[in-house]
Length: 277
Image (cartoon, rainbow, N blue to C red; front, side, top):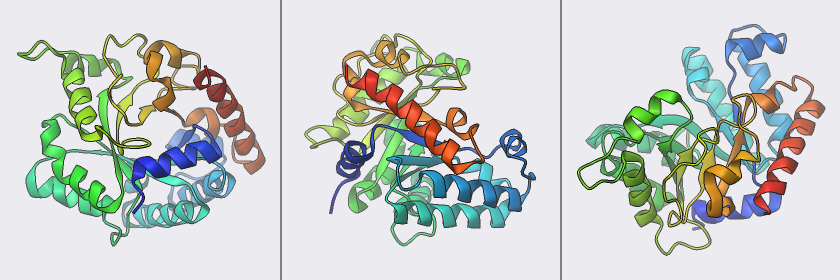
């Protein structure tokens, strides 16, 4: 069984270091001339999948924008997950789940069990009930070759109150998360399957990412204000592990599929230039 880290390394090598989000919020649907309902959601999602599924390494649907339409929205999410996987893209479902005991085990089963309707390659997770509370996710991911991206240093300004708070040992909460994920990835080749979410807008983090040995998802690029060049400041020597993530910067080019592909190619070229350094 190939690990998620192995699949991600291969996908980035073949298709380039780029993750594109599918975030069909009402304003974006309107920009595309689509109705803010299930039909508009379906047309939007299918267009993005058809335009990018066979050329982008990772696609990241934001689950909430599908869930808001209830069962029919979740059915569309199931459908595009299946289509993306068939097209060769890795699917990172942005759900930011986190809980304890049987509940987090149920979340793990919902997304990381190959028998589940919403089975994906990897998910995002929140560690703020303790990184150890996510153990059922890590265990099921390891069993089935999946991945988990854990929030560490996020782009939202409110995050610093928690993430940069210091514990009894002097480390920040974020550094504790970083260190625990680093332990999970120790010795993995060519890349660990457990990643971190580190916002591209936060500047010099003051944190040590050098031992993570796993993917570093970098949201906040494009419409949120960060540029590919900012990745150097945020990640420094850890640049080779960075997976840049764009959403609106690419999606605003729609609904023309050719324009979506051109936008993805443009930001990928920007990122290649920085990450190659």
